[in-house]
Image (cartoon, rainbow, N blue to C red):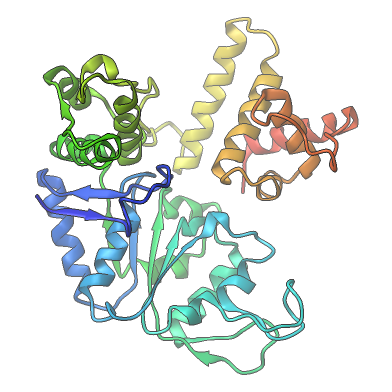
Length: 380
């Protein structure tokens, strides 16, 4: 069985938002593996597209390991975790006195990847200004630090990943078309786990062995009922979700045998592709039409406090999407940190407020309603 993992897969850290292992038993996975091997032979930029949890970073590392740059650094950057105000300084560096962190110069992440590979996860979250500078780096093979007059050479291969269609972001002005064209030198689609069912049980047994060894020397096994439920599940969270399910099942199973009753499977449906609705010119149009229909259904059911509940969902989803960073969440929603904290406290997402920063007052309610209406109308 061909197995790829992230570095130190046996670490004691909890499962992350990333997939930590890939196998290639399914026919579609074998086709994916061949596509990755082809991309590794060249030096063009690579764009990996696929849902969250499908193993895009593992694929990026495999491209690096197979290529001519394998002995040089592989630098992974989460664009979603970069503060918009600091993204350019982090990626491109800054000269003394021009950065937000004091007078000392800062070496860029691009320079840190010199001779190797720069992996940009969720590149669609990169601010437009940083996108323009990244395009220059890819075209001119040089990077200009903030505040500098002379650029320095930058020999890096860029591998980017996205879980949203960048073409749709181009259509609404959220992503540069010229940068997308540059990244599409070698485009690779990572199929969702439900589209490669032949990988489900091999992955489940891998995670079973990995986490089972922490519980004791005796091997853990899957029962036939567990295998049937695993194969029938649509896996909206992909490989990451499968890892979580196996880890939790091991905590409740008996005698190292995981049965179907030990599996705690989510009831969430898988992400559906955009619908070809009348007048919908992009995936965003389809999503907004679906959202409008959902809200209309809520009102038809005569549910109480619909607005407050929709507002709560918007803030909570943004907070989790921003890796539970209050400042980043506030920036994405265009509201204050105090407002985000107050709504999260109200919903129970945060347990208690920090004593140094009290929750927002009722005077912020108007700001919240305006922000959510703008978001539900169109988030550029």
